[in-house]
Image 1 (cartoon, rainbow, N blue to C red):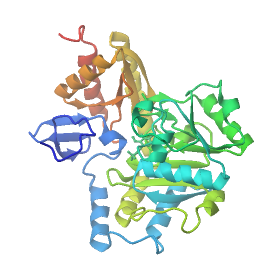
Image 2 (image 1 turned 60 degrees about the horizontal axis):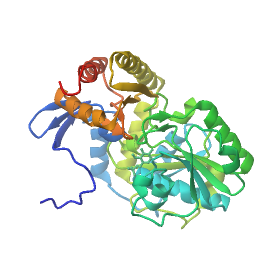
Image 3 (image 1 turned 90 degrees about the horizontal axis):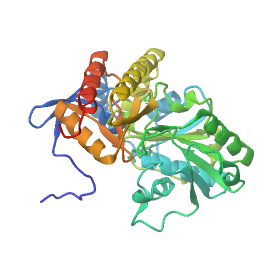
Length: 385
Ligand SMILES: Cc1ncc(COP(=O)(O)O)c(C=O)c1O
């Protein structure tokens, strides 16, 4: 018997070692990892520089409570603001970052209505789950936090009626990740921003999966010519060390005064050292250009593959966040198993999408290898041959 709650559907593999983009299982078998631990290991496994900063900080001071000043938090917050007028709150996960964003939006506006989108994913805590536009994730957990409403994604029709003077915030992912790797349309996002401004509502961008270089810019919102009032981060920020962050315009700072919100571990010294180094490394023009180039190449080759495959409906995404929509759910499960046998680890998104989130340090040779593995599986004539 297992001593664990069965809340995850676990595969019969155990990872015991990681090196750059390669994972090794308990039998010594190597796999190319196109999941990055669900969008986390952007700098890959066993990175010597990150190992070193973590070890040095561990030898100095692991934890200090948030009752004292923290130069480490100040430094990381300044890096994340990227010269713009944002202040940061640090926490330990994506759900916590969104929870903070929802609380800040309600407190700062004095309004309660939060709008998010069907198919979205924002986390599993009550506020974040209530914002998540998927009934399957909310099932059995009612009553939810009140005053959350879901609008159709990439659809203009109801925006004007729904975003009004009672709206505290609109919360969205710029590429829906768990929901099926669905990029938001530029004009639609601009319209949401404009309606938020007109109605005094805040625009919250969930960058938990799209941020930290994943889509080819440091933040995905930089590709949309918008300036969110609040945005949230986690996953890639700590490259595997648990850390989350919420950034908000400094005009909102007053609403989160002393005693309003907090976390014992948030902004922990170990987490801040790692996050600061991750941002240093990823937020450079060369690194981000390389992500764009590799993403463009992978996307192009996947589109070519799609033309040859009767199992692929569509290829979409941004940067190194790509999805291959397959013809049905059964095919997806079959394809992931076959790819695993070939030595490529992939993710599912929605019911039918094969999601690819390779480490951002993936090499050109590894992309070639992955495309060959994908071609071998997806361009087979029959599912069962
Ligand atoms: C867009 C988005 N928001 C929020 C979350 C929740 O993050 P966490 O699992 O760290 O709570 C996720 C996790 O997959 C996510 O993809």
